[in-house]
Image 1 (cartoon, rainbow, N blue to C red):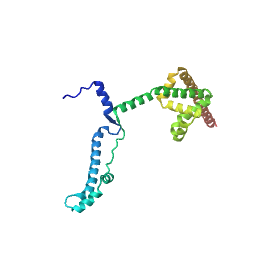
Image 2 (cartoon, helix red, strand yellow):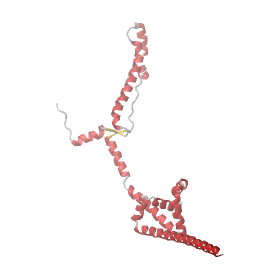
Image 3 (cartoon, rainbow, N blue to C red):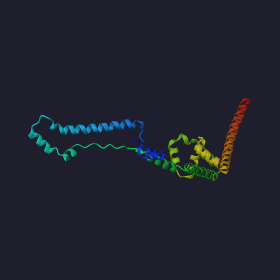
Image 4 (cartoon, rainbow, N blue to C red):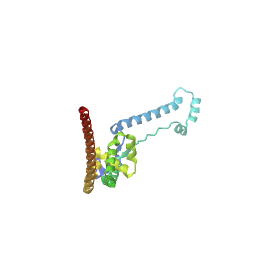
Length: 235
């Protein structure tokens, strides 16, 4: 008698309901380890049963056999010898696995959109804070961001802070490291990117002015020293 031929749809339904998948660290070793666990439990059950039934082995008298038979009732054996129940943790049917996978996939829908919205808001806030400051304050903020990596305690504080200035410093620090989410947030908003570049150019001009002022001061000191030396030589 031939077996009933199953359609592909029926085979797939049986696969979803009968086949199992385990989320263990080594899923391919599960089949081998499960057999070993079952063998261990059966071995324990047989040994306990043998210990109870060892008293009724051949060679004892009829009176002793009657006494032992009275004690070893079915209920007594059931309570005395219990088979350990094995449980499969992290094991689901293929149908349940596919259902979990689809739920996880649905949960990830819009993840990049939410991530982009978060960094776009950070970029807008940072530019808004920088626009509210004058040139010197912008320079101080940039210097704070540049020195942030050397102070782990301050870095942790700024990362957890809700203060707009601290958040702007944190944004600038990530930009200085070349962090992609912050850079992409500026690229997505052309007006924001232009405003940020204008602020950075403003800070660069202030740095250049300070550098020129320092160089001029050093040059004046050098000229003054040369004049004093010439005066001493003339005397």
